[in-house]
Image (cartoon, rainbow, N blue to C red):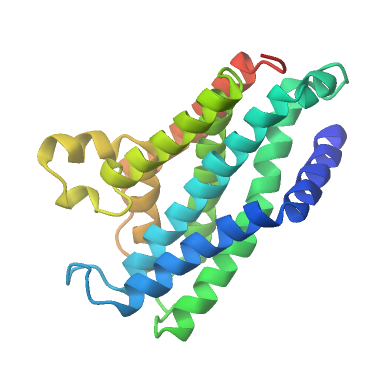
Length: 239
C-alpha cells in the first residue's frame, strides 16, 4: 500500500500542474449549479437540494471517469504506464492510486459546491453527511473503474471518443440531468441499474434526508466493486 500512496501523491501533483484539466473539473460542475440554480428552467419538482445532488454526481462522473480515463489513455500512448508496469507498483496498486487521487480532488469539489449552494440559499439541515460521503466514495470507485476499463484497453484517440460519448450518454439517459422517475418506463428501469442513476438517487436521498433506497445503494456498491476489479484484471500498461 505504501507504493500506492506514493503513486497517489504523484497523481495529485500531476493533476495540480495540469491547470486546464483542473479548471475543467471545477468550473463545469460549479457553472451548472450556479446557472440552473438561478435560471427558472428546471421542473418545479427539482429544488436546489436535488440540483446540488445531481451536480455532485456530475462532478464525480467528470473527474473519476472522464478526466482520469482520458489522462490515463494518453499516458499509455506515451508509454508512461509501460514503465510503471515494470516497477513493483503493479496494476492493482495503480488503480487504487488513481482512484484515491480522484477522491481527494472530489473532496475539494464537493466542499466548494456545498459552500456555493449554501450561499445560494440552500439549507443543509436535512443532509446526512455520512451517507453523502459514502455515496461519493462509492461513486468515485465505480466511475474510476469504468474509465480505467476503457483507458486500459483502447487506443488513446478511441478512448477519448469513448469516454466523451459515454459521458454524454449517461448525462442524457443515465438519470443525472433528468431524474430516473421522469424518464420513460424502459429508460427509467435501465437508468436505475446504471452507476449514474444509482449514484444520483442515493445522493438525492442523502441531501434531502429521504428514506434510503436500498436497491440504489446495492447497485452502486456492486459497480464500485466490480468496475475496479475488471479494470485491474484487464488493464494493459502498453497498447
